Image (cartoon, rainbow, N blue to C red; front, side, top):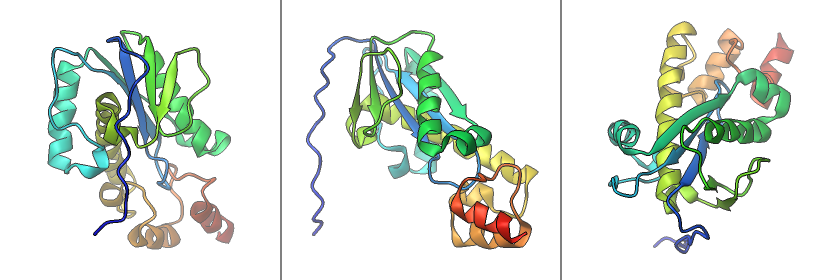
Length: 204
């Protein structure tokens, strides 16, 4: 029996329709950009099956990705680059990516819900929601857009920088990735500020 306690339902202080959810993907990997998405769902066009993108199968994520883009009132995907991650640190780069995603929405929100417990510095009325991708539909939708986008990009990077297995582990520090990093050195898309990459570079 699991000892984990489920979080209570999130009660949003905003009751209007122009509500954006925002989430990011890619804080943990050693390579690639951090990608964020923002979504304003259409209240008359519900989407079934929204959940934390990490808990969905790839097939389900891909199907929801298309449905979200078709039905949402507005959506945007943005990023912070590897260079920005190394310059700012991963937390601030993630917040920057989320800030960019919300700003790029074609329909600007009246209220924003941010996954996690940190929010960007901006003028939007907002709230943070711990485990929001499990508790708020708009944040779940954002997590799906961000993850599918980033996963596709990692498959493309795998073709440009073969040998690391980026298409399989998506840049996360798996055993295969660590062994490849030791064998091949760091590629241009590896994050120099992350300890495993920094250690490898110092050995060269």
